[in-house]
Length: 332
Image (cartoon, rainbow, N blue to C red; front, side, top):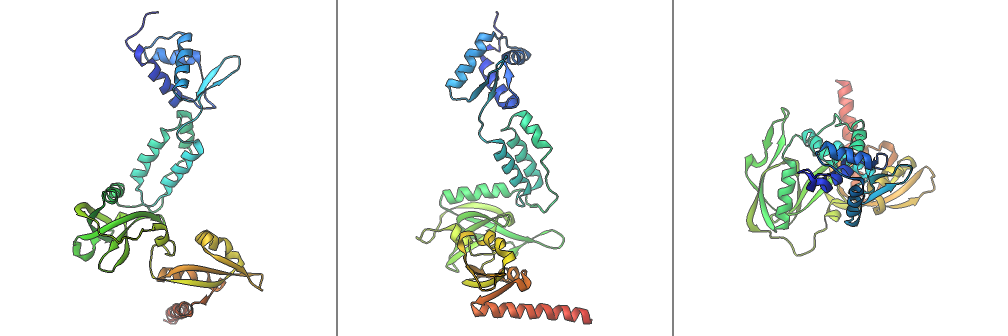
């Protein structure tokens, strides 16, 4: 049989067919493989297909044979299982810090890691939810720049902004450059944060990555404390990345809130039964900020701070102020 000009590409096409066309539910027979090769201008005998499949297997490609009246072949293992890809896709489409446009782009590329039949099955399940998404299209470039700065042990400069009621950027410090010694990137409450060391305060500070712009890596090396920084320990006691004085809190909660407390603190909470079967006692560390106090108030009468006393007093003050505010509204 005369060989075509594309003959040298036969093994590459074969590998492409297995990756793009096959999975456990969609194997290819030798006749189907030969037909696909013919469509691409490549002639092939059955024996050569068997030899090529063995070559791919010897190279480590997991080509599985399904034996029946007519043997069929499919790619047995991929970089990601279908369930793993679905988890990744769900995470991206629900992520606030990735813009809708970038989410669609990443998902499209992830689907290419599955077979075409699997990718088609994803299409009916994938939705870019109509929820709050970042308005900063450059966030992933920011993450890349910050990773490079940390790896190179370099200081960074940047500008930091908020949004006003018209959704316009308003730069802090009148647009002056911030200077920071970046330590780590962390993900919390659906946002990316840069943790850095601040020499003025001799402590750690953090910034929302999607609110950073004009990030530049400085030729200056970082100047950071010698102690090993633990990003997880820094973030753990905070509520929605709002810092405050870290205290050991002991509180009573209604039993219906047990799973909420376990979801929030995991293994970092000490639980005790109480004489009242409808309540339990929890002890945990938390940064006492307005956000933490609001979180506790959200439990209403289902939470009671036992210690420290100053935290209980602060909650009492906030509760009275809130009640007074609504009383004044009613009277007016």
